[in-house]
Length: 169
Image (cartoon, rainbow, N blue to C red; front, side):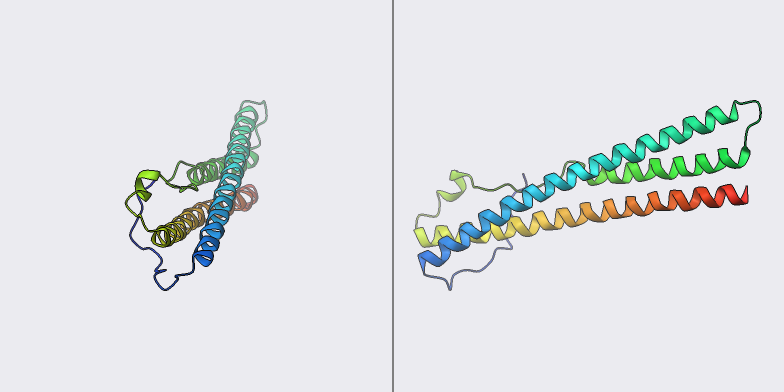
């Protein structure tokens, strides 16, 4: 887990404990849901990594088998190699989307809260801290989603590239 940054939400204007408790509750719910979304996104990225990698290896095996045959189809071999290489690159890019990253979970450590003894100040601190964590988690998920989208574009390029390689070989 990352260290907490100092770009906290200013909640000094809020002095109603019920409002602050609701802000903390909503922060807990939102933070919990961002963690669930991140888990789902990692599962998707991991699945795509396996799919793209398997397809790339299968196409390389197919190209190798065809090149060893009595009458190899050179256009097919080139197309399979182009598609395989692009799919393996897509697999690598999408694997980067699922790599371990700093991500904030819900709750807080008692030692961090112990220095804030006033109940309202503590609620303000917790709500502000949750907002900072939510913002950090969303930024991490946005970077991961960009990698997945880039990998999908490369996989689509594999199809187009293979077709082009087949036609022009």
